[in-house]
Image (tube, rainbow, N blue to C red; front, side):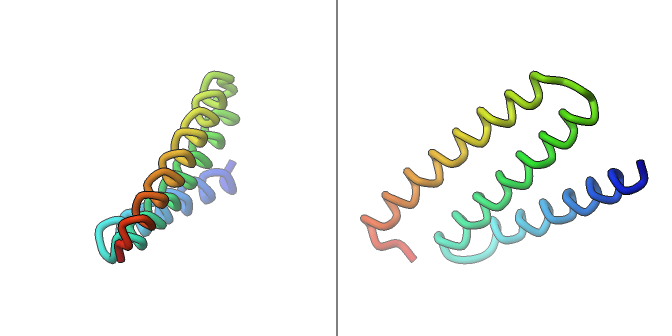
Length: 85
């Protein structure tokens, strides 16, 4: 169980690093930071869902991934059209 705890702590620290990228930088760096943040949150949800043996957590992480990916695609489309960055 120690390895799992270490992986969760490492993942949470990586989430905080992604938050720093969200705060600082150009609009494109913010979008990359959001994408990275949402990927790490999804991975954390999957790990906790498997550890707690909750099927609904895995379903929720799948829905969150689909919504996050869609939002990144839509925002990057509009940012590209407006030549932000």
